[in-house]
Image (tube, rainbow, N blue to C red; front, side):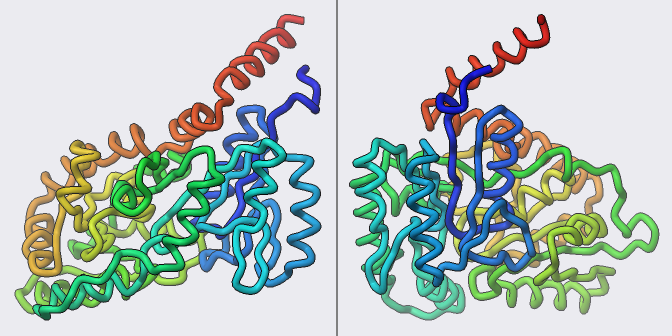
Length: 358
């Protein structure tokens, strides 16, 4: 077997978001790499990570950094944070990591480089207000981004809309475990005829939840047997069963791209409605999501409610889409190329074959 000193080790650290860091670490371990996830937060869905250190516990973070500096070859950072910061000074470890020849990959996810106030602007415009468009990012975010560019090997983003903030970045999208999300369970509408629409607002302010609620209420007044299921602050082990009840999913109606919720619903063959900005959509022209804004969400919902055949057609196409782009196994292949470890995996695979031969 390959000696431990030669085995490439990967740290995925930062703020956990929907179990993404842990899923990547576990998949990399299955491939034969020593990968560890470190979270500075407690994810609201109660996902577990290999290691948790409170962001405010600077002493423990410093000790971990000293050990990690000797131990890991790749530092894959989520949500724009690194291991060492002090007061208003952030990303202090980046020059040290580069001095020691480490590979550094920041992975931006959204609000780490986009100001939440930009969503308020989008909501105001939707409501007919004529206000000046603000910058997408705060000055502090742009300052941090400049430092990331200086010390990183490559910049990763989870959504194509972030290309417009993080220039010359690489798309590394949301990932899901396809085996976990696969299901043949029928929605509850097969038993009672009530069409259920699921919406999972991690942030109502960002997702445009008020427009979803308004559309459902209007459809109910029209006489449609439709019900809104709000998946708010549910723990991870409860989400799949909750989604399974629904016929249709709605992600967000303001920003212009979909999140992990859409991937999970599509993997369960649920048709998804989400606002997809045409200038972002060009990056994935085969995306089967139905694009809707607050102004036409009711019409798009009504079409799906009335047409079961259309729901099935979109659901089937959705499953194929997530298999192609969001399967964690597929994305780990891409990450190994980005890390420069593709040959390393081939060597480990060959070693396993040699052991079986013996």
